Structure formats: C-alpha cells, structure tokens
Image (cartoon, rainbow, N blue to C red; front, side, top):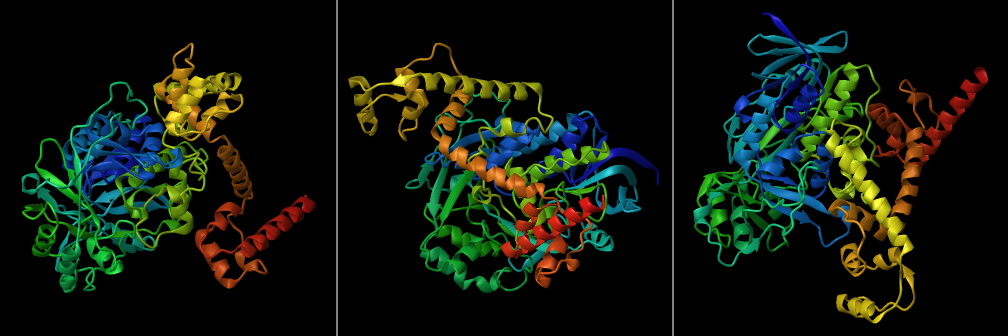
Amino acid sequence: MATRDFDIIVVGGGHAGIEAGLGGARLGYRTMMIALQVDNIGKMSCNPAIGGIAKGQLVREIDALGGEMGKCIDRTGIQYKMLNSSKGPAVHSPRAQADRIKYQLYMKRTCELQEGLYLKQGEVKDILVHNGEVCGVKLTTGEEFTSKVVIVCTGTFLSGLLHFGMKSIEGGRAGEPPSSYLSECYKRLGFTVGRLKTGTCPRIHIRSICFDGLEEQKGDENPRPFSFSTPIEGFNPNKISCWITYTNQKTHEIIRKNLDRSPLYSGKITGIGIRYCPSIEDKVVKFPDKASHHIFLEPEGLDTVEVYVNGLSTSLPQDVQLEMLHSIKGLEEAEVIRPGYAVEYDFIPPTQLKHNLETKLIRGLFHAGQINGTSGYEEAAGQGIYALLNAVRYLEGKEPLIIGRHEAYIGVMVDDLVTRGVKEPYRLFTSRAEYRLHLRHDNADIRLAHYGFANDQVLEKARKKQEEARIEIERLERIIVSPSKEINEWLNHIGEPPLTHPVPATVFIRRPKVTLKEFNRLCPRSKPISYEGEELAEILIKYHGYFEREEKMVEKFKYAESILIPPNIDYDAIDGLPRESKQRLKEVNPTNLGQASRIPGIRASDLVVLHLYLEKKKMLSAESR
C-alpha cells in the first residue's frame, strides 16, 4: 500500500486533536487529522458547556496561545456566567453554555477550511516506529502514512466499553465504535496501560419539565467573552436560562434499592471513576447523610428540545433513571430522549511522558487529552495545543517549551500529570495552583501570548492593556484623596468607614468596597481607559501586598527548578535515600529538584540528601576540570 508523507499526524478529532491539528497547519506544517468519524469532529460528548472553575482560565490560556476553543464558544455560546464573582479575582472563572450542535459544526467547518490540514476517516491500528523514533501510523485498512511526529488524542475511545445498566456495548461514546487495536499496540511497544471510567447524564425533553418553583439561573448582565480577539463592547450572547432543582430522599432510596443493577456497584465496571464529578450512585453511597444534591437543567441549544440533566451522571438502567427523574421536583413527567451511561476506556499513565508531553519510550510520539488520564474538554484542548507547540519544536530541533506552574494552569496540569501521575481521571481546580493570584483569566494574554501563535492583534492588545494599567497606577499614585463631606457621605453609603486623613488614591482604592470605576467618576480621568486596562490596574492596586508575597514564593520555586538533575543519575548510588524513595525517583526521573519535591511520597529529608549529593557531584566535577 502506498504511503503519503506528512510532518504531523494527529490521531483523534476531539478537543485535543482539534487544537493540535489546527495549530500544526497554521504554523505551516503539512498535518493530517485521523478521526474515527469525521462528521463528529468537535462533538461535545458530555455537558454542553465550556469553562468553569479553573477550566475558564484554561480556555483563555488556550486562546492566548493561538487556540480555537475560545473563539468557537464566543460564536456559539448561549449563556455566559462568571463563577465566583463574589470572591477575589484569583478564582474568578468564566463559563458558558454552548449550543452543542452549532459548537460542533463550527469546529468541524474550521478544520475543513484550514489550509494545510488534511482530514481522514479511519482507525489507527499501529504506530510505526524505527530505531526508537516514530515514523507514522497504519490504519485498519492497511493504509500507511509517514510522519516525523504523531500526536495521539484518542479520548475515551481506546478499547471503549459503554455501560447501560447491566448491558455493555463496545464503543467510545453512544452510537460510535471504539478504537480496538491501539491499546495492544501500546503494550507491544512497552507502555504500561491503565483503565479509567467516566460517565454522562440523561437528556430530557424540555416540554416535559415543569419550571414552576424551580430556581432560574440567568446569564450575567455584562458577559465576558473567552477569546481576547472578541470585542467586549456589545458582546451579549445570552439567550437562555438554566434552572436548578434537587434530588431528595425518595430519589436516594430509588438508587439504593437498585444498586444491584448498577454496573458500578455490581463489580462489572473495573475502571476508576472521577472523584470530583461522581455519578449520582457514588454521591448517594458515599454521602449517605446528605439530604439532597444539586441538579442543573441546561438547554443543549436554541434549535433542539434536549435538556442536559447536569449532576445526574449515571449508569443505572433506563427504567431506574426514569424513576429517579420522576422523583425530582419539576421532573415528575420527564421524558428521557437519551439515557445516561458510563464508559470505560484505556489510558497511558502520564508518568511515561516528559514535560513536553513526548513519550519517554519513543521520540516524536506525543500524547494529549484523556489518553493521559484527564477529564474535560478544556483539559484536553490545553494539552492539545501544548503538545503541538512542543511537536513543532521537536521538528525544528529546538529545546522543548516548558510552561511552568508559576506561568499557567496548563503548566500546573502538565506538571501534575507527568510528576504525580493519576489514580483517577484528573480535573483542574484553582486549588491545584500555588500561584493562582497570578494565574488569573484576565491576564492570560500577558502571560502566554508570546509563547504561541496568537495573531498580532492579541499581542498588541496585551501590550496596550499593560501600558494603560501602568499609566493609570502612576496617575493614581500622584493623586491625594483628602477627607471631605462628599467623600465621607459616599463612603458611608457603600458601608466603608469615613476618611480621617489624606491618603494616596492607590491606598484609598484598596478599601474592599471602593472600586476604581466609582473612584474615576469622583475623580475623572483626562483620557479614556479600556475596560481591560482599568480592570488590570485595579487588581494590581488592590492586591499589591499579595502580589509581593507571591513573587517571593515564585522566586523560591524558580530556584528549586534551577537545580538540575542529570538524566542518567544513578539513584541507587545515593546513600541515605530509602529504597522506596529511590524507586519513586526512578519511575518519574525528575529533571530538577523542584519536580522531585512534588513526587508523591518524596520527603523533605530525601530532598536534602539529593541536593547534597548533587552539590558534591558538582564540586567533584569542577575539581576534575
């Protein structure tokens, strides 16, 4: 069978595959994307939403690097909310409901029209390797395609098995076949292969919902777009409401009496499920004292009657799902269009990857998405663009791009995966980041645009925003606010104590209930400032002390990361290291002392021994020279 040459081959057309495929073509490389079903490129398998806690920050980082996810949701979103808006900016997280069908069609069309990106429907049977380096793929049809780089983004399709109650069907998601051969290929190549489980919720007909008495959730009055290239002015895509209801004791009793029909609790499912997005069966069993659980009713689009019952992920039989739904307020007459189900799939434990998402065993082979043990559209897309940027550097013979934990949620996620590995599907949270005040959604362009291939407009907007904030802060430092009747009446109105002595405006604005926008009404600027510039200036002023403390933490982090560990180090030769610690260090093979400190089970005393050993080796090396 004849072969065709490509620079990059992307296996999979999901959220990771899209960012990798589009990125490769946009950077001028001949790129092929192979999907099991080309019609399903970009499909939202689970909930019809983009963003959320930490995930929203991640989408803005993807956009800053040149990715497509933020642009797509801005064109197909139907409701926008800023989560945690009542808290500090470190945890503000944008989220948007998508029109599920329009989102998928936009992504598919974008891939179809992208010059240099070749789409191919088929199933990859083998990854071709020569002398420890990837050289292409072979399909089940016998076709072979050569390439210098392969990025595998197979999602939940690796030996996928769907569970509908006690009935099981091979598949990567409902109605679609699995990838049946790649797992065995990975085992032949010497990789360890694991098994995970995730699930989805039932979809019901909107006409069968009684909204009376349910809690309505409207979109934000002033929604914030995801993409830095989408103008804020006039942006208001809010077209729907979501609704909240709750499970109850009757719902929980229905679940308990049917656990013997649950593949999860009957032992039929062997894969490990996600802790932070558990099935309703898990919630009821593991939290028996909880009287109710939130259920979010999320319309799937403007031109469909389907509503996603978020919070009711389940693999129980369809008749039990219907009985559960009918026990919930507002869903007494619910009509199920698509039942929920669980899916088990193989993954390649990510401790077998380098920090650039290239496999340690095979040069030029990169992994992104759920094959690495993650969950979520956003986590997958972030890995997709990160793997692509490193694949391009590999092709060009350049050093890898390593985005640190102090630079981005992408850096936090990748470091967590390759250093700590996964015991269950991995999900990002703001709590995973040590420096989350710095890793805000509003400054992702400032932090990352220079690393990727974002257009000049985004880079210029980031530069302008920084400059506006700098000028604004300098202006406010020169202004002295003195006590006056007008000022103190206003402070009293907003619940702040009166001003007793003159202070710089920057100190005045640090008061919790004083906003820069309101201050600028009292003391107008001579020149206008953009929304983004004013927002950045206010954050930098209000959290000045916190930023200083975080910067000191970052410097300590950088120091630990700068102490490099030779790749050929013999841990067995280090006296004072326990056998268990040596084993864990050998499994991960950390590149520096900072990474070593994050390996589970490595103690502070181990790091001291390791650091002393490295310093001694450095001194001996210097003396020999």
